[in-house]
Length: 140
Image (cartoon, rainbow, N blue to C red; front, side, top):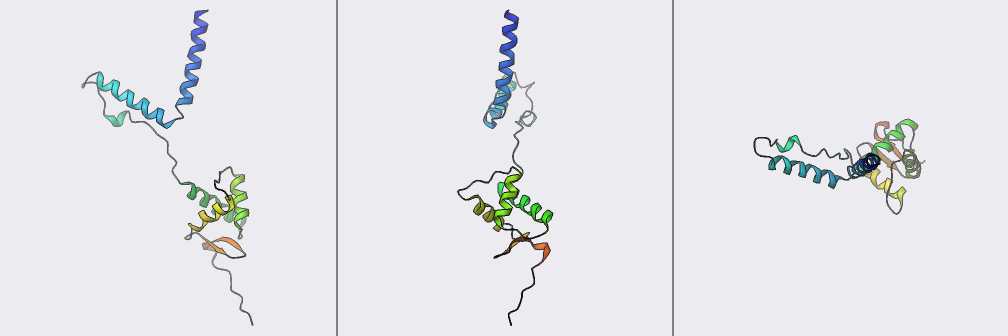
């Protein structure tokens, strides 16, 4: 009976630890406590701090960059210009969350920061710079 309770308690503790490991502050605390224990053990056994530094995963790209990359990929696959609404729908379908009061306007704002890769022609939408500019029709 006591062994069963111990197993249940161990499983619950492991589950809680897994949940806590998702929290960056907990991971920093855990690494700091490991460092304290090592230094309290004495100078002969104390490792370099970098040996036990927390492995904090950080996003390698900003939200704006991810939105721009997803939009550029969408434009390449479709091979034509697209309006912000269509780009937003495609990005949303990929599961990339777009925050803001008006998510379509948020996508347009992110796109305006990608001027080296994307241009926007009023009435036609966004297109890739590599496609070149569409011909201008002269009125006679």
